Length: 156
Image: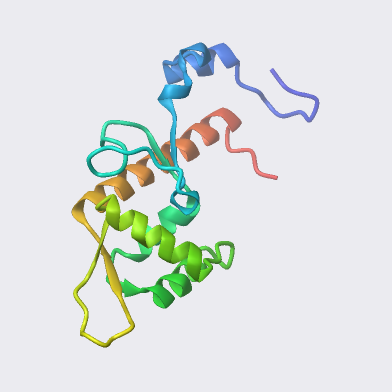
């Protein structure tokens, strides 16, 4: 079947059965959004969701975690995030340091020991944070795969 642009559309029922879900099967409880920049985090023993829950990281959180795969200090994180996002994500200092504190509380990152008198605090991703990051990468791959499947590779 083609739409008014002459683009072949896939049958929605066929696509829905391929994904093996029904839109009526999705509830608000199936979706958890973690937005550390706004303090919008549910609490548990690590201040976040269990690994078997669906976690959708904000772009800012994703880039902060990615930047901390190797140890970095605040300014280095800001520069790296801006560079990786091609300038799309710009972190203000207050937002970044609030996010870093929250991520430390959640045990997704740790603050590394620093020399007394030094103003540079370095942070690094923990193993738990790496698990969260890897799950997010898999979630993002699935989003792209489903988008390409439904749209059939249509390019503007």
